[in-house]
Length: 168
Image (tube, rainbow, N blue to C red; front, side, top):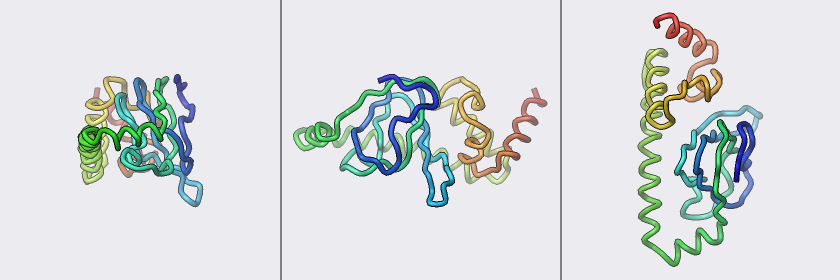
């Protein structure tokens, strides 16, 4: 299925199928009780989501929104879990997939542990190039979303991006 930029693939709290992202990028947004939105993850091509439901069914943890034009394959949940029962070796494949995602998230945590805001932004930009590609970070994420990923206010992100542009 094709998903245009800004379209929702699934919503937080709903239950349904799993998805294999063939191309594009998705963001996972979590809505808190007070209505505040928080960007918690970026999904890259090749991933099967939701990660927390790869072994057992669970409602969607967040809302998946296309960051770019994307293509996703729907994987019906009953078929997915039936295949896991019939082919236990697939559990190893899932473990490897989750291991890769954990490494990716550990790198994101490393970004947050930087003390200097400029270092946080540089680490995110490096991570972004490694996992997302050569598109500028600001072509895909808003300054507010960048700030959410690295624990900075939008205003600080704006100032840091301006400083980077002036250094070039």
